[in-house]
Image (cartoon, rainbow, N blue to C red; front, side, top):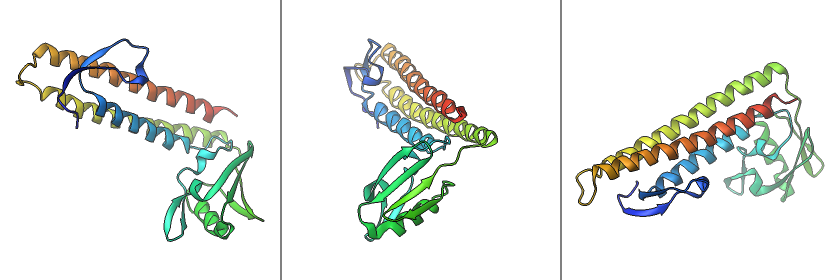
Length: 205
């Protein structure tokens, strides 16, 4: 929740090019929006571009030692070239479990055990598949916009909820609401930047 504390705080570092100060404490707002951006960034990072990168395996969970662990918690992941990912479990007894986890993760990747490592060949994408990936990208970005709008709605309720409190004027509330829109636009712009960069990656052969 965003606390109704009236004091000047500098705008979040993500927007340090702006010289703005706010009376409402938006710290929790920034935390929530930053988490949302991080989530969507990781999500779109798993969209395959036709080139190998370690992010492709971010969603893989391996059953090991009686629990489910992230693949980077049980193995070293490297990219020796544009079409190959190497996964080297630190505990070689987990080779089979890691291979199974990758192949069952719905990533359309084929992991194969080769001696003490697991090799994953990342095939080039067809033009049709690239277009499908771009469509998926836009869907994920729109999902991110929905998340940001929801966070904005909650923050607006908190700001509006100050009405009638001692020392809180209508002008102060209007100023805070204006600042909220500035901040939301900044995060929306960052989301758009993510989309532009990722679409360029997907369409680059």
